[in-house]
Image 1 (cartoon, protein in one colour):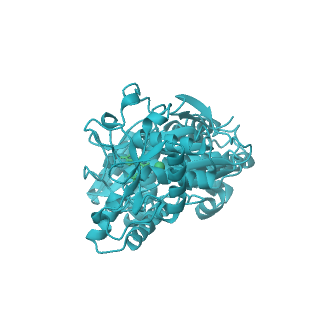
Image 2: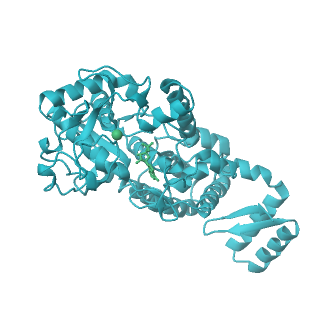
Image 3: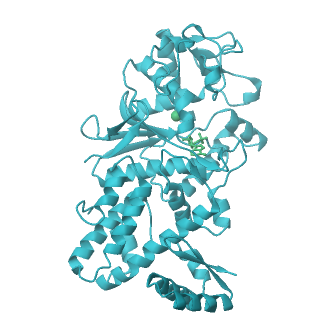
Length: 480
Ligand code: AMP
Ligand code: ZN
């Protein structure tokens, strides 16, 4: 059974198999590097990582390309404010982004092209669009894409294009040189922006004079260069669907004459804070460093970010992080005695068993795996994982059967990108051993429904200055 996801374009579940019968080609819009990425950005990047890992476990050969936007209004403005060259400034934030990705267990893409390293490719694509009368030089010297020249403009986002047919300017009567705009101001958009004084040293020469590329064209030029004129899957946060992805489709297909630009589209819903999208402009963001400063590990953050279905918004709360901590601790707690029984150390399991192969799709982890393959249902997969883990403690099971299942669990954990026996090291180290042991006994008593003993142990912990916080799947210990 191939992995399936909901494709935004066809509005149907589609099987993810390589069109060319060999390599599955996956393009993702990457970060704009002008500050630390926030965990909303990482929700999207990590869900893309889970999809990539799931395909790998399924044996799909894959090429993953993700760009770095290192030139736009924001990067230019901020580099100038800090008195740095655009290159130095964006290199610093790209490095920071890589470090966060690594901590969060996101695999590096196979190619990671930067916009400023691909100016000739972008110019060449714009030249084709001008030659094909899909683009024109505006009164301000910038080059604009003519949206009415693309008869299927708006298909991805379900835009009503009837109004568009006669409109080459927005409601304010101007062509649009902003990179981001909403549906109300659909209009021709900038492919090449004529040099302005505020761009400083950041300009390149082109057949239309000095300037710089608009934002949308970089993804078209680089995806076509690294993956070909038509590739399998394109991903991004749902906010990119319009106008960015709509513009990518129009300019790519009009330049190359090849349809479809991307066969399928994978959009993830937003990480929210109190009902609003987490975003830099709203100032309601958390970075990984913010959460580490609060005592959470990157694995706990990863778990929290993947714990909701990708097509549904996820509300970010500290309780979500606490639940992630408990859940990871529960996986480790359940695994420890099973590994002990097999004589496998936790380190050996972590380092050698969590890998993409050895998935047994008929065992106790099969329902979890099926959930993951069916529209990347991570919450259902996690539920299935916990049920299967409890089945493995059955003493009737033969050691070899348990070992086989643990190998399957390793493949499932690999797909989710969850590295166990590292995730809770930090908080656990702060709790004295005898307290951790008492808490564990109390948890066990609760599992055995021995309420009196559980209460007695809780009192003992309270007297010692520790508080226990229970959740559905586990508990946490805190200094009272
Ligand atoms: P940017 O660096 O702003 O270009 O964004 C990088 C990626 O993060 C894009 O795919 C965005 O759609 C995505 N993104 C931005 N904010 C959020 C959010 N609050 N939740 C999920 N994804 C987001
Ligand atoms: Zn893009």
